[in-house]
Amino acid sequence: MRVRPGSTPVGAAGILSGVRLAEVLQRSTEWLAGRGSDSPRLDAEVLIGHALGLQRIALYTEADRPLTDDEMATCRALIARRGELEPVAHITGRRAFGRLDLEVTPDVLVPRPDTEVVVDVVVEVAPEGARIVDWGTGSGAIALSVADLRPDVTVVGLEQSAAALAVAQRNLAAAPELVDRVRLLESDGMTAVVGEPFDLVVSNPPYLVPADLERYPALRHEPEQALVAGPVGTEDHARVAAEAAVALAPGGWLVLEVGEGQAEAVEGILATAGFADLGRRADLAGITRVIWGRSAPPGAPASPGS
Image (cartoon, rainbow, N blue to C red):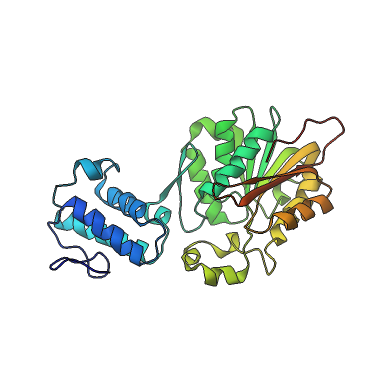
């Protein structure tokens, strides 16, 4: 990266003390862009705001103030971590998802905007008073968001990883208005709820293949078991579909997040498992992100539009 004479880029070399906030923000943006961030300005705003305890708007209303040595050191450390492609949510420990502000650690996937499309579909199709299970809840993002948006439903979040489940439990504790309607259980698949009937099963299962971890180095900071399904990538979709077919009440829904290019394969998995009225929905990038279906009795209402 090209810098002005006398300036020092953010990163291993650090930030010179006494520099105005606006300049620190600009240097950080430029340095992160050169380190592979796909949203360098936003990353710099979030991390510098976090380091200084400022809202993003204050980065501009206080743009001319110089930073102290301690403030510089804190900014330098956070920006350097992002330069190694560590997720911003891991650095700050928080991630906004829907209307919630969730704790995030390296034990869970970082909730992504794509998954909010999954929540949208669940909120639309779940019948009144639905009993819902979130297969592989991770941070609790889907389970808590669905319960937040649909006060009439109850949700069980299932998670195999005890460390991930602890994160979800803390997120639930931070939303006391949801505690009476959300249960979080350690479970390998749906083993902890065998025999319980549900009206809807939702999951954002692992759907990558091992080579994807080499292709996307930023993913090394997130738990591999929550990312990689196997050599095909749809192995966990098949497992969820098989378990959901047993657990769902007649007419129950199955809603799955899918990876790019997996829509037709996952539709085939659902059809083989006995699901009908299949639907799909794209994310904001136009990539099919959600596949759903149901074991529907005659005369049930139609599926929502894709």
